[in-house]
Amino acid sequence: MGEYVITCCVCSLQILFVLSIVAYTGLEVDGYQFPAWSEAIGWLLTSSSLVFIPLGVGVAYFRTSGSPSQVGQWTCMEGVHH
Image (cartoon, rainbow, N blue to C red; front, side, top):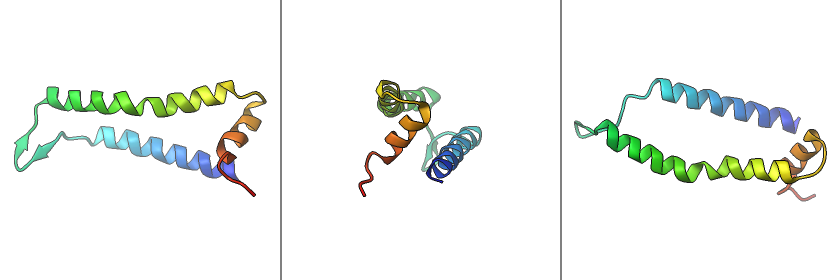
């Protein structure tokens, strides 16, 4: 059940991400449209810090021994203590 919920969440976030890219119109504040180069620099700075989150998850996933389903259970349940 837990893997199903995680899969649905990941798929929903991917769909939301793609739709937000498709509907993106640019940054405008008080009628001023920011130039494309300034938005590109902003996205580059944002991406430079956000890219380490999935990279860290991938490194943890591939360094953990076991089958893919065992590793998935371990990474999803790491913070849960019974």
